[in-house]
Image (tube, rainbow, N blue to C red):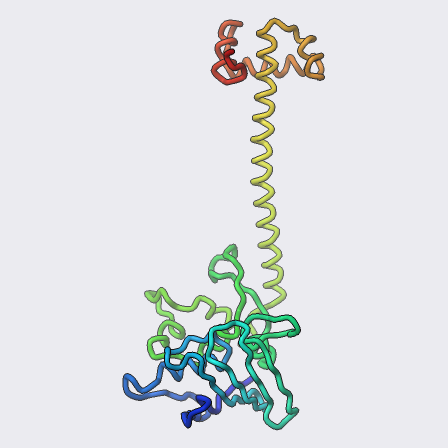
Length: 284
């Protein structure tokens, strides 16, 4: 779907800029308003509002051509996520919209950003934050990502277009944007990768939980063995310990043998010292 900005106006003034088909260059003096114009154009295309102080609170109106449909968009230059944006189709079906800028509100089924993505027929996708690491967190491809090449400041041409190896500020979603726009991105394969990520994450979590449980069980069994050894040192027979703890005599023998092996005790005096050192018995 082809998009073209035809004009943009600062409401309440006579300041209107018209654009020709193809690439347009905004030129002028250092204080000629080039940065302000770029910020307004980006806001018109659904980006966050980030304008010079003198434009904050003002309103812009722009005309855009999407395919064969023409729309008039009016947006206040405020950072509030639920600020309302007015959209009206010029001629054609004559549809109108009044949508929150970027945060969905009760009673609305889309935002201004969603509207842009829908009218341009762009897919709703999430991609890895780091293109070369499938385990990195998934982040959404926003309308700003899709349209990031439509309006560029001079210093961004390298970082957002060419992305040279020594450029650390390049937009890492560029790879996905080109694949999506040129039909090279396979949503089904991406869905399978997402599911694989979920399964891998779940297995890793379960593995950690298993290790944690094994450690807890080991500590419990170690304490259990120690208590049985302590009782044995106190002069109780294996049968008496089994009756007191509600287990079989064979179980008592196993735990006592295990505790003796861990303490390295060879006789009763060494076992007494070991159970005190390990904290199975507190001196009273």
